[in-house]
Image (tube, rainbow, N blue to C red):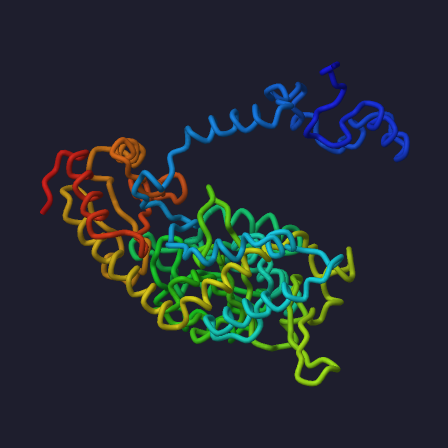
Length: 468
């Protein structure tokens, strides 16, 4: 049997004859012509350094399994790393339902009977609306960063203004997505935060707001874990100049924190990953956007919305798209924004999680994180040479630890923590000027007192210090 192939077994249409036929059909002499607009300095000019294709399924399984064995996971290590993707307990029912074939495979599209999926997503939207104290919630977008960028674009279309003010104390990667998503349609102006307090300054905000500003975007809790103490005042300043207030939040903390709408938010957004999703090496993300039932804003959603209606059969209800013609599914390139594959599976999962937890469960979740994080922050602040920033402020699960006076870098400390099977915090030095020697630690409901004490003990050993 001849095992030689002229094409790659895992890359469709890589056969030379098929590629030639495709090039002839579109009127080009080579595939390179498709990339002629890419500047030469950005081209690789060599073949990718890829291993040879493995054609046996068993060989492929063995090879990939061997690669995965090298991973260090949260199963065998204690994890204090958050920074946008969080370790929470995932009830078994979440995996049981989202792995069912009729749900796992029916994530998008309409070529089959999927009214059950419509109802599941309607239930998710309803549960999220109750959690957020709002009225309209979308089917999840790709992640929280896209949700934030889309919310800002919604404000631009609703107000007709071309500038947005974004607070600096958000994940820098998210700020990069916002810039990329909103340019060149909008100008993004960054509002610095005070390094000593972790908060943004209202006087600085006043100078940036004006009749050309469509929206202010900030988060509570912020990326640094601090709850915005001046959220209401900031929202009032926005509304006074005709701008919208967009607040990003972590839905897992809303059992103990005020819903952003009650702080003056016009649009609320975030990521549903904390609601029943495993971290999946950074995956499991799904961005939500919420507003009140205001047509000015509802018509600017680019993503799908599912509603409920009575059918012609008495006593029965149907579920379907709301205001469908505003989406790119209906209007293609003339839609509000292009919306491709959405994270509907994670919306369904979040719906399962919220229905299981209920209001009391979400309150208990928030309280547990609040108590655990406060205990951890006080415990670490007792390690010689270590201090915790913003200890006098409210934080629910994340907080900043300052190692700048220990004589060791965050990287060195994290390497030594890992040798003790502990994942340390996110190094903030490369993310924010003035935060060198600081790390962002995350504590959730999965951490026990023993876990936190083990972290404190390990830091005492690493730093050669005694606990206070």
